[in-house]
Length: 483
Image (cartoon, rainbow, N blue to C red; front, side, top):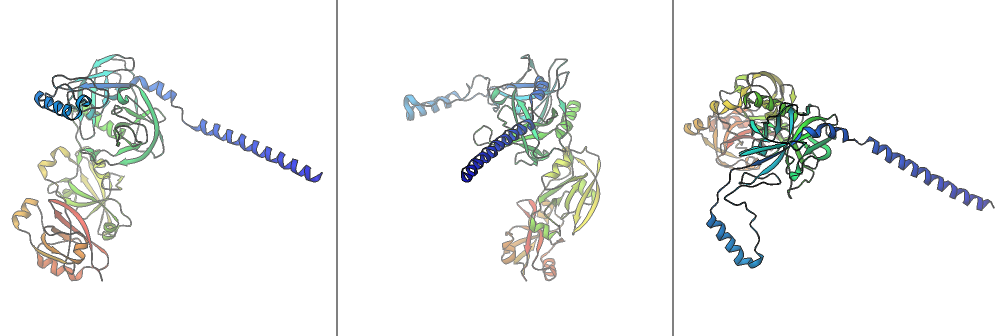
């Protein structure tokens, strides 16, 4: 009897435990569901200000004979199963359903209204070289748009349509965004108007290896951005635009969860200048820069790899006037922490030319704050050209020769010796014959004799910075002399 009672009690306890667990699981699921963001109000308020931007381009006239020969060749190999070329008729343009190049066909993208009088922001690449630009509003009205201004470096453009009392978005701030925040995009992927996609911020300050993008520090998200989303807004949960969707990384043409948006702080600066002047002025400091790896951090007595290592200072530029020198590691610019080389152009580009700003550097292991008047990027070519570099030694495993005056003048170098051969430590440092060594361990070299005199005093068993010019580019290498 006691045994039967015990079994019954055990079963009853198990049932109660399972029931309690089930209830807790349901409550937990409901709680999690309630904590997820609800985007419905955000979309209802902002969708009317999102527009579709479609473009057509001047027809590209091809050679009909070349086209006919290619079609004959395909028929020869495939017979009746010959594939279609899928090329636009060379005699006329057309409409497209996704972002396409100016090949005579049309393209489509997105945009958003920032002013009730008809000012619209989109991407430069959406409207670049377009023959006509048509803006379709949420209520299906269509307007032909004019370009107020377009900026390739930031990939931003401002359009104007003749309309009044239009709904407009609210611009937020991007400086204090954090990884993990919820964001939402509205746009026209593949020409499908007013499509909504949500996700989170995956990374802040992403530099992309695309031409002209070094003045933009992108917001990376996992939002399902696809062709046609370009130029559309990225919202935070407060319903503010914090980015402009611009690029995706993909192998298939569709989203793989790597999308990139231009921070709204950049956009506000660029848009204001485009509306006022039709062009954009950017700050410029006149330096060549490298990233700092662990070896360079050790060589320059840094506590960790960070900052932008100055490998060249342009003569007559703002940096030279401020006293910035080759070998300085820039750790802060105008109050912004410079984590890597890619951060610096972004911060410099945000500053209005003519503004004096603080620049914090580490020089010979010691912090130093300088004041620099920011120059104008548009005038950079009139001042000088950037030329990056590399480095080496003789117990270092180096043989060097004098640098001829003509080369020195062409490269605008104050010092330098030419590497004739490498072995040992220099070879391990990846120095090559033909490299021009400008300085070794912070000391400029003007002749082979100076290298011979310097070498016995070089410290051993730690990385030494070597500034080298290779292929007209200047950068730092590190060499280590074994004890």
